Length: 545
Image 1 (cartoon, rainbow, N blue to C red):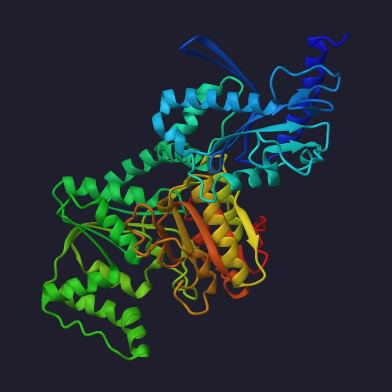
Image 2: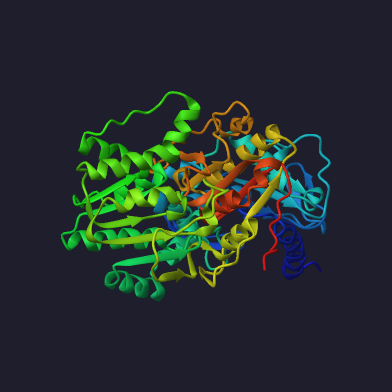
């Protein structure tokens, strides 16, 4: 005699086949097995159970009913292989469970649930569905899965979702949380990359004992050199020091080479009127205005280069002699960007017994590659040895790309592994860039403003055809000020001193790959996620002494 327990045992084996198949789905797919729930309805308590629920945060949710063995249908009645009649059809069961689940979700989320893709389907893992026509209960053949779907279920799942909607509405974090609470404890809901970023950033923002000790030294020393690799917290210390000196009533100058960095520093210190935040060449112009010194920028390209490299320093020195404002404290961030000939001009802006602090990284001398960098004065050198910006996987790759020593330690030792995507040409790179951006924003739920795209050359350059991969997204070229919904885009050089949660290095060619310092600077801008699109393989293994 065929018993209910026997039927159940056969059913369990079938469910195992399906679960084993679905377990091979890549993230962000999620599978919940044997889901039960109870609902108080108009006629008392209603109990529901779905054999499996398959979820994708971008496409939607499918409630599956799984039936084992040889299934037959006669005169609209469904039968097990044993000949025993089913109490109701598998499709009816799946539909009922789907509506029960929707009802539960509506109690928490309201009518918004109706905008999401939530459907049902049946799976017969022991048979091939040979009928040329679908059942009246099924909208199409896509709602019926069989033995052939076990090997690779993802294409069939996507096909079903595409029939429901070509433009599905992604599930929000709150909606995903409600789903998790409803299906727990058997569910393991996707943790999107965006959430991982939030957790990592929290760890990175915590000050280290070393930073506190360095700041204590800075408070009691009139001149100090602070040396640290990318991500060691130099800029944070420079800003903190500027604030402390301003609160003591001192006139403070905080300068750097990079325009975007200067703007970002200025925004962070906007409430301190006695702090002048300005990049070097604008400082020259300002000093000339203050001293009525002519500031004439030549039009000739060769003369223009000479003007910004050499003549500006002479102008600044002259302006200081002629009455330009002078300062109690001078702080240089990214001091390795300054030429040796500029230091005398900078020193001329200091009042008697002024305090002078330089923060630098010898490995980031990308603007004056052929000139050995020299400190502007002799003083105690304070090393910053702990990386506070990058996770260890990102920081390690950045150091290896530049063939530089690794930091002594990393604040965050685990994280997302960087990815290197090799492309045959810029057209293929454009496609991969578009796919990557779609994955990050739509599937991993990363806000666009948390992403920076960096390249050795401007994306508007006619040769930068990889930029076709940016369509239809809106980009933000004002990288110092994030704009919601817009991806920051800049050259690696102009982004020096800045940082982003996720960095995509793109447009890397054989020629640009030779510049290891440039690769180091670009890669080290990433705090959590790093993706590199290159035409050549990169030496990312540790080859330094």
